[in-house]
Length: 229
Image (cartoon, rainbow, N blue to C red; front, side):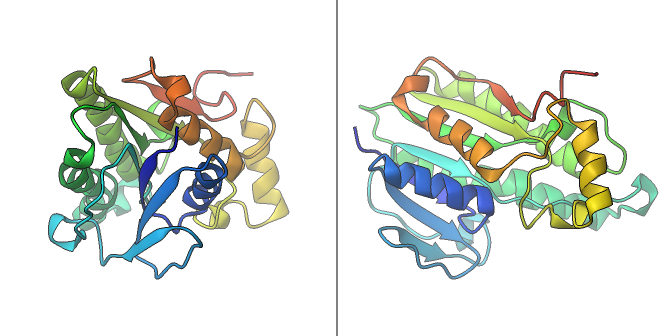
């Protein structure tokens, strides 16, 4: 059955891969992005940000939503300012809250829906220099559980938690052969994630095949969050 899915943060590499996969399944996509986007077959809205007053009105029913906006800001704890912490929370957590409060009412009460948020392996595995992103993504993991309980059984809520993925956002961490090899050796699967790996998990959680999955943080991280070799 064809679905209508709202994608917030549609310019990200993982979002772009997810859109392709959703279109291949004949789903309709509505995209929000801070960048100006033109995607064939997609209703695109450019936004200044993801606070309530910045979000456009959408007048069609939705079957699902994915919230992608994020940032990687790795610093020693004593060099992270309160403004840095606030910015991370604004992007990851408050933005997600604003989008959900704005658009969840568009999921008809006679239907079931699915929400997918983006977390991080850094909330499950202590990693140096990750204090601000771990705190913000930890809020997303907590929000997932609370909303999955509150909205059951009508709306499923899950989070996909990747490890470092080969995207423009993560490029500075793998932009030399030495850095890439170091990261690969730390992962149990001996590789860096690809955008399609994460997108497949997202599109699955949006699908009817995942109709009995809710309140989960699904790790798509090559085993990094659970395994030590």
